[in-house]
Amino acid sequence: MTAVVPAHATGAVTDGATAYSIENCYEDTLGNELCATMEGRALQVVLPNGRQINRDRGTSTSEGYTRDGVYYTTSGVHHSVMVYEDYVDPWFWDDQVGRLTATTTYSYADGTTCVFTEALVAVDSIIRHDLMDITCT
Image (cartoon, rainbow, N blue to C red; front, side, top):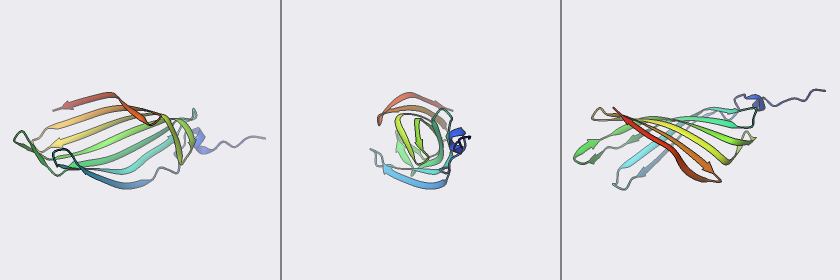
């Protein structure tokens, strides 16, 4: 008798790979409104070793603001990858140890483009920065 192994246990994309759109807006300390929109979960994969990888993409914009006499408007795209070390089932992830890497590209009205690369480590819901790099051209 052969045991049937669930598809997600062999690295298949789970049912959680769905499109969605969530917009969050907030004001920063200078009163500028900043918005970020998560546009979809591109992929959820459960690896044979029990880890789950979630990939998200989205956009972010700001209404425009003045800093040091220069007016800026920003728009950008981001792509994030979260690896969950312990997999439970397709609708629940044990995030006792989670690793997130995100790349966000911002284009400013003055022609400057900046790429922000960030890595975070979450342990028992406590998040600490692991890496932060900003490159502008």
